[in-house]
Image 1: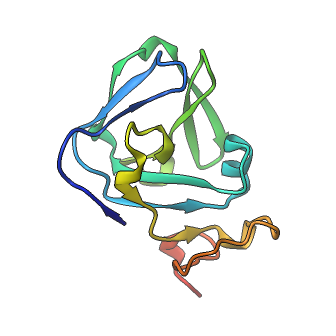
Image 2 (image 1 turned 90 degrees about the horizontal axis):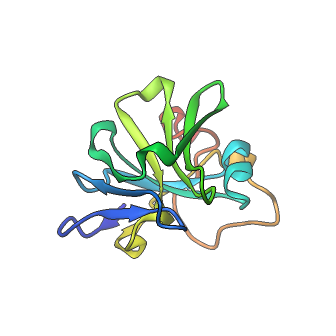
Image 3 (image 1 turned 120 degrees about the vertical axis):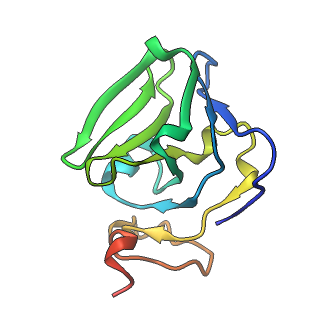
Length: 143
């Protein structure tokens, strides 16, 4: 992941109801090609970044956050007013929060550094980059 560690890290949903602040810069960023992310985003892959769970701070619109168990592995947060996907919390990594990278006010500050669940990618959506491609999660490695 490349990015600028200085300055404010803020973001929110499409309609502006939900606003958040990151108490620390993202620690990691990538593209997820799993089927759950495809369906949640309506795209072939979802760009996300990770922060410690307590670093993702809702500053406005907490009552408008919807939560849904999107799979056996975790829960997704979204804005109930406009539907913007905001956050994924994994049961196996409770100390980490993965948020939708494009919801940052300045998403250009973070560049994804890998693809995961690449084995689940939609074949016509072949990335035109040379980033590492993990068949499943990064924890499972490149094999």
